[in-house]
Length: 260
Image (cartoon, rainbow, N blue to C red; front, top):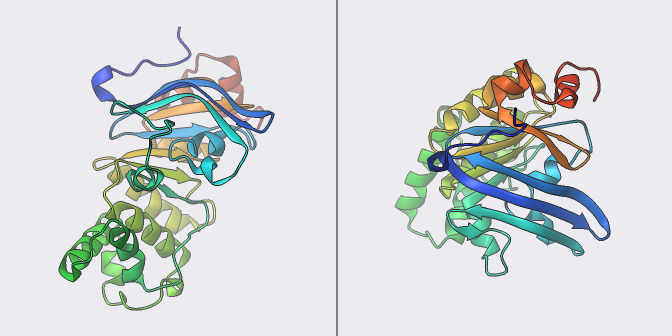
């Protein structure tokens, strides 16, 4: 049995080929090869420090913000190597949005949070900004809660609402992919449930890659799961296989709670 599933070519959006990342002389990610399916949720699991978030941040080149980091291999999306020197990073990060562990609304109004990225893309028409903001907030299941508070500061929203606002902000610029880095770890159970339901719905529109420490969450919302350990991809398969019949003993030990 192969430890990694081969996703049919017509369903693949991103191909990761022999990906490595080094911080100076330290190799944090080693020779990862896997496909990411279009309009699906792919979960990255593994113990703390195993490289999940480091891997996630390769997709939108977040590591470029810090000097001394070095990529190896390729990440191919629609024929383009995302690690290439000719990639426009602003454009890349609009197309591959990111939602962090802690909600990160900008210190401005609810409306301006959504409009910010649209204005960066050159959309300045007030009617279009208003329409796009409403659509994004509806997609993020937040419109009904904030439609009368668009001119109020985003800091007045609850933690769960702030996280959905950040998701709406990412959605407004119409990305193809959204990266989630433990998006519910700072939230209460009710807010967590809303975010999980939202992610499940979002895959109709975008491709989702999520890092989570919560294995129940991975089992609930993802279609595919990648198990990582010390910077390496140990096993990648359909989520049901990873959690009920993994091919690698280390995967089984992790998902059954014997370590990690």
